[in-house]
Amino acid sequence: MKSSLRVLSLGLGFVFGAATAQAQTAGAPGALVETTPAAGARGEQVVAGGQVPDEATRVAVIEALRRIYGPASVIDKIEVVNSVSMPANWAANVQRLITPSLKDIHRGQFQIEGTQMALSGEVGNEALRQKIVSDMASALNPTYTIKNSLRVPVSEQITVDQALANRTIEFELGSATLTRKGRDILDEMAPILQRLTNKSVAVVGHTDNAGSRASNLALSQSRAEAVKGYLVGKGIDPMTLTTSGVGPDQPVASNATDDGRSRNRRIEFRVGRT
Image (tube, rainbow, N blue to C red; front, side):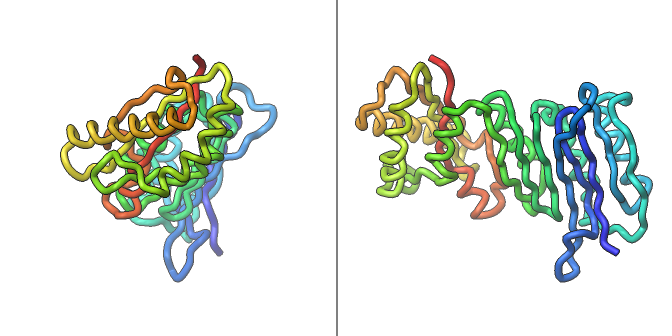
């Protein structure tokens, strides 16, 4: 019978999961981690429950959680069931994800199914939203992918994120010249940005890791400035826009694949107060 491990964080609304036999398709092992809010929790209490294939995995998960939340805050209800299976090195990979940054996520859900991860919930600011997933992507091997659904509980940031709609603002290869598709996306976003009141918007450029870090930092800065220049041309007050380029330093996916590198080459908009 297929089964799964779940670790629930009551105080923060986290469910955490381990590799499992659930969600196996065509004989592939699966892993499930998810988080859900729970009422009546005291502080940052975590309840770990579900099934794992051996005692070593159970101990590893519990000890990792206790290092973050404290021994008194973790309740162990995990069962050891030999029929549960996991992807290779799953326990070690999960331990890399149990970091203090999880405590920055509220009302969230963290789900791992095989090598597919989805992270949602609320964080305090946009920079933190990007950093949490970037750190996770850097800690794991390229077979793991992360869907970042973390959000900043600010209506203006949500509006801007929805306008961008996970699309990539494209540039000509190796340059800071916007493509037609990139300009079209900015044309859609400009009216949204114009309606922001008493807010600043940081335009942050990112690249993949191809080439030298120095050249990527310069390119990402130039691209952020190109986006600002285009938006100013659309009527956005230049005093409300700042730019920065972080090059390859904040990836959201592995740079070992074409898809990952494409996701890392992006422009990010962070809404703040003026």
